[in-house]
Image (tube, rainbow, N blue to C red; front, side):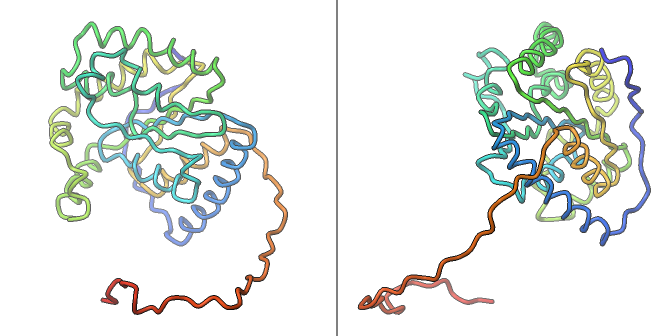
Amino acid sequence: MNSQKNIEPEKKDNRKINTKFYNKELANLQVELVKLQEWISLKKLKVVVIFEGRDAAGKGGVIKRISQCLNPRICKVVALGTPTDREKSQWYFQRYVSHLPAAGEMVLFDRSWYNRAGVERVMNFCTDAEYQEFMRTCPDFERMLIRSGIILIKYWFSVSDEEQEQRFQSRIDDPTKGWKLSPMDLQSREKWLDYSKAKDEMFKYTDTKQAPWFVVPADNKKRARLNCISHLLGSIPYEEIEHKKIVLAPRKVEEGYIRPPFSDQTFVPEKY
């Protein structure tokens, strides 16, 4: 266990952040993410970033801001669903291993193998023996990944009870966000303390020197996004790659070619 790091209790951050400042900073950080992506591709790095935390803590929001300007062939987002019967019979880490990056790739895990230490533990989806085996072997598994050359970064998004409740309510009222409020999310409201205990126990075993947890206070979504992206950029040394200026050549004119009439094509109705 990493005894040097003091894990703060989950608390609410009421400080506001100016929207104009946020948009400007986010744009600057996204430019740097493109530079990081090019460096990862050039140097054939293998990067894994894990996002864990409470339901409605903002993991999906920061993943979206990280990935939206990047090449999906280099930056891949992995959000696995409920395991199949076949996957349940496999070695626990097996279905995650298949999504690990090749050289020149970065994988963002929207929840990960830590499901076993969180939701599976709290909701009794795994046995005590399976849980204990995970806690015992997970640090070894992550050290193995690191020895293989993978850069592993783990984030825990911390949100207060009050803020989580507000976000749940907003999902109920917003027809575009209703899908985010699953039956499992509703049950998590009733098991707040159980999830707190599970998180504390998880940190006890898996907050290691080789693969520490980085806690992101996330009651303020904008601040959490900027802080997390900034930390990610600072965690992987990179340099800007110089590119030759792109000059577009003039279009080639094909003499004698007659395009078919537009009336032969089916167009989308111009409703707007």
